[in-house]
Length: 167
Image (cartoon, rainbow, N blue to C red):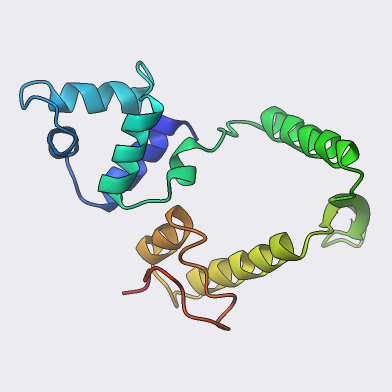
């Protein structure tokens, strides 16, 4: 997802028009919607300071907006390659590639992470996806949990989140 798509999703979640967001950022009323449309379409990219302001207005974690875009499988694979190279550089083993049976019992590759914090996050994410599929939480609540993570984390019910995300 591109930065522009992330801005648009968060803006829609906050029920703001492009013009309203642009005016909150201090753009002239006549061009406010055009500027936001340019960011959302990717014809312009907001500078770091402006991106921070957008994150504050939209009440989202700045990392949600600026994280690298994983638009396809190839970019995700290269991210994993980077993770492996960083692990080697620091003489740590962050993950292993293992075989697990698929639904038919045939072996398929999977990643096993050797990072306690990452595994805790994956457990909480698994729980949130289950809650969403069972309609315990809404799409809006799930989105709120994602865009403000880790402030919305409650360690699978073991603690109170820093930021409220459930209605």
